Length: 140
Image 1 (cartoon, one colour):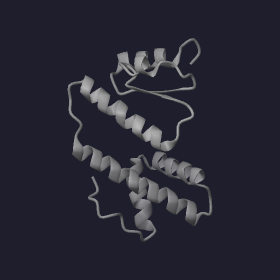
Image 2 (cartoon, helix red, strand yellow):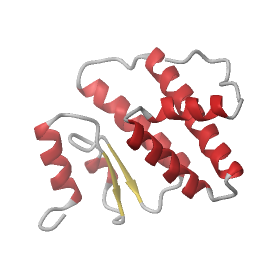
Image 3 (tube, helix red, strand yellow):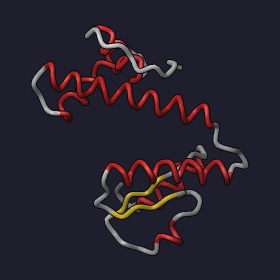
Image 4 (cartoon, one colour):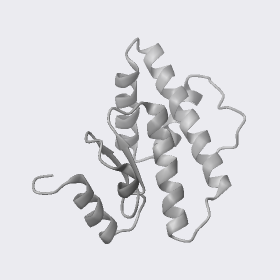
């Protein structure tokens, strides 16, 4: 981002289209001052996947509160289900192709791009092709 800081870029994005923004920074600045619009949550790198997941949820929740909305519990259940499908398909690809989780993730993303389908739909297809049944959660 030549000429812009991450927070300046976040502000431009937010002004063009208000959406939840999670800032990941290598600089341990005062996070309390940073976790406000347009940055709804602020994490200092390095960040593990659990902290990132919590940060995304916190940014989304803060954005909804700012927008005067309430989180939709059904939406969260759908997203959780979709995430489990994607995780299972990625692990299956890695195991079947004897490759890394990262390479399997890239293959899954490429297949979604090539097909024009959402990632969770591609994941479901991969599981079904392998004879795996999706978990008992409803597919949304």
